[in-house]
Length: 316
Ligand code: UD2
Image (tube, rainbow, N blue to C red; front, side, top):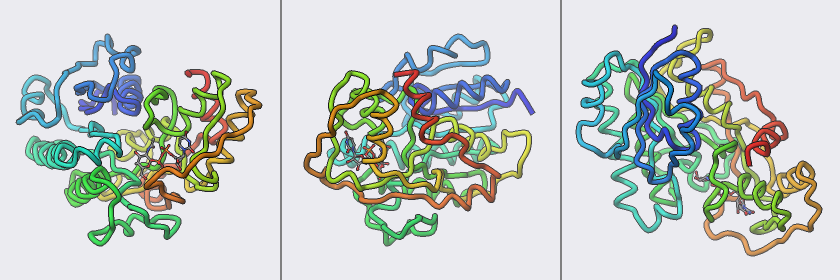
């Protein structure tokens, strides 16, 4: 049905803004939260004036936030919790802050959502929860208390996912490498796809860290948005998803070398690749098993890497 009340934290972010846009287009009401720590007002340009959208500039760590918002907006029953410290390198130097924002605040939101009788809280987990596990494809059960996380980011996301998954209203989605329009290409910690596209279009040389044979599971942002909607049970068809933790990727592996060649091809960039030193702490291979979520939600990724790159190119 339409006209459900949704809260989206991290609404000014790359993924949060696409999710809010889609929820509004489906006829739902959206209350968006962001403090612009890593989000941008421009990301909300297409929906900020939508009559069914309300925005609050605040931190998710604010005491009693969901209670306060629920007091001002009736009928809120879905919480999409995407707000977080999203930079792994930043988390290395800010462990306490990362725990507070990515774990403590998530627990509070979850408890509030349950008390307020929300139907669902869907949480943005991460492939970082698997640390450097090389048993591929990665199954949800591989991340456990014995996993050695490589960053405070990975550790906090793991603890938060576990809490969310064990709550009857909770679904934690573990996202692999998401890409698409609005992913910030300019920061040194940006995803490899937005960086490569940005460089290739400026007719600059693409730099590969290491030999380029490391591989990732790249999933396009519209497939991610569909995963959120299904996890919440806001789709018209398909089953309702049991609480738990689910990988969201494509189950397809792409090497960074293949990626660079595809992007050169799509952009007409003919410059030779520049190989430099491997990035410290880099994971070699990352690949999701997506059987659990496909089975539970009847979700399948629809956008091929080539098609997704083309869409992203239009935006850059
Ligand atoms: C992803 C997530 C990160 C965390 C992590 C957990 C993104 C943007 N980051 O990091 O938040 O969840 O997974 O494992 O999704 N590379 C180059 N040249 C460049 C830039 C990158 O060769 O100019 C390589 C890089 O060394 C790495 C690969 O590309 O091997 C992917 O790098 P990334 O930063 O896009 O993503 P990743 O998987 O390290």
